[in-house]
Image 1: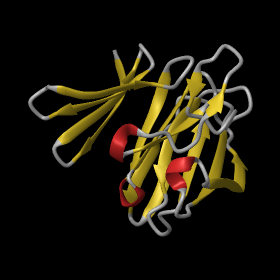
Image 2 (image 1 turned 90 degrees about the vertical axis):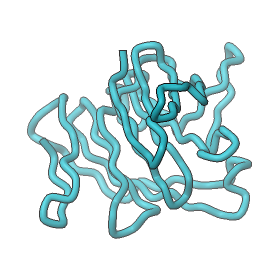
Image 3 (image 1 turned 180 degrees about the vertical axis):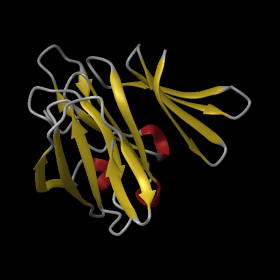
Length: 163
């Protein structure tokens, strides 16, 4: 069962119950499948300019996928040998429920967690991004007065709202 679906040109991207990131043609042909989450991912966003896909889920991980060649931008080797594309526990011990790319600065994005926190991040790219040489910086943190579920409402009169 898909939990998030995004369209990009002639593709549909999805994440769902089986923890897979999938890319489909508009005719329904699956052209990509990759696993990186240890539990259900709920959030999916496309960072078109840098050809990156963000996913976030119940396992508390924010995964960053390189668009071309299905490479992982960040990866951490886990003790059991499973390779996770991960930035670690993006929201402490809670689910990442939504991701939004900041429209005014494409190297920045926000995440919402079930913990009621909104975090703004900056992904710093360099020429060796495909070798995991990028860095991530937490640049702001806000606590909401409500908990999950919450989602970004994008581009409402030039602002991002949370519902």
